[in-house]
Image (tube, rainbow, N blue to C red; front, side):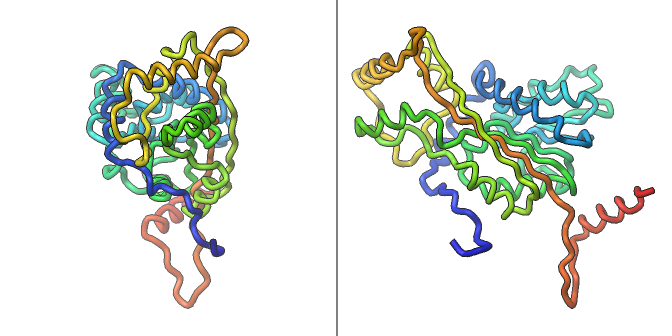
Length: 304
């Protein structure tokens, strides 16, 4: 890779049609996945690093991210806007808006639900994106959308599954010749490089390993289905048989921990970065976007 080239985060094997079906199924679920809510609480513990509380924040893939309450607890005076990737999840978030008599519905902190094309450039002070990046094909385009949505000095916080997720299933599928069990998740170092290439500054990446346990193999499979689907184009093309499912359950029974519970591992990657003030290049003709010029003038007027 030449210096200055964007990092290569492969997405050629990502099945967009399968991702759309997965989102439609998860939109019908009674609630967002438990793991998403737990990661949202852990990511909210990192909010104190933000020196200036955001006046406005954008909750990217709000329903499945399950982070609204965690951020509201940290910033009760901030205005939240939910963003959903499609109409099915938008309808779910609209149904969760505060009641008509709530100040969050109509007052100064009125909430809204948008689709990606409805986001105004530079309209938010923080983009919060919990546990959704691994369900997207074009990570570079997503980073560009986050950068475009943020105001100057705005803050990005996100989490996603890392490549150390479910090694137990990956090794099992390889050994049995069952094809890929899930789409490969991006490494945090590649994500950090992609953030810089997208124009973000001061990116910080870290990760933690979580071990989830279940009372039975069937309970484990049920939870995994609630988390998503296999979005790899090279996954097994047909329907699995009951005999195959029983075989998988027997393999999972061998994963029992000391307490007799099924144990599986998840790598959670966290990232945060800032949209910096644009640098005016030294050239015979210096150029600056009208949006950035207005932001810079407003900042200078506010200085004492």
